[in-house]
Image 1 (cartoon, rainbow, N blue to C red):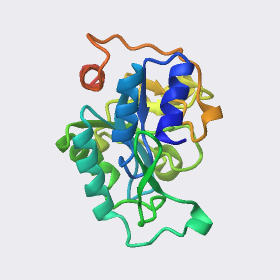
Image 2 (image 1 turned 180 degrees about the vertical axis):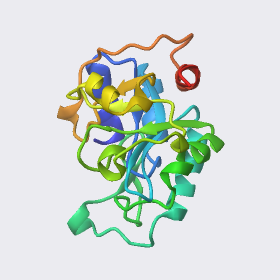
Image 3 (image 1 turned 180 degrees about the horizontal axis):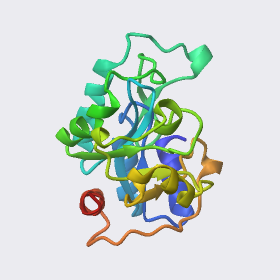
Image 4 (image 1 turned 90 degrees about the horizontal axis):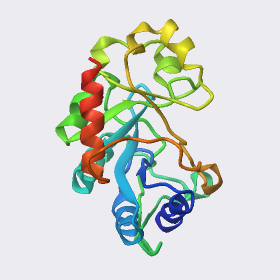
Length: 222
């Protein structure tokens, strides 16, 4: 899942836009965006944030610098545990030609110091939007870890997997009944990437237009 490979695979699969959401970092977003600009595919810079409760939250930004600044902040909150490549694999930072330009020494699989009740506020301070990831999964989801979604979390959208029975979850958790639902591939390998089938209507195909649209639509559901 190097930047060059994943962006070009998305193009082959017929996508116009993807979001790159690595775990607790946005350090490879700039390379992916540069590749996308060359082949005509929009890359939204993002992150899959692991909150202090070990809940995964999708964060999307309209600008790569905002994403990178947020990434630096997140890294300042994670435990000072170094990665062990022989166990967890290399954490590479790459350029648009998939050349290695650095490594991230801090282990990215740990929880950050950002609580789920502060996630929306903090991400918003960096111009982004966020929502709980794969709420139907039995690990690292707001439902599996906390058993609920509360108004104090301030989420206006959610993500489910393709396998989820959305009506069942909306009946069980009324707070999400009127929230927009995002269905993402959450691909960790090229073979997990899906062919394009979901559509969002925006004035132009840009990260800013798409994030602005998501912000507006999610707030309409308040």
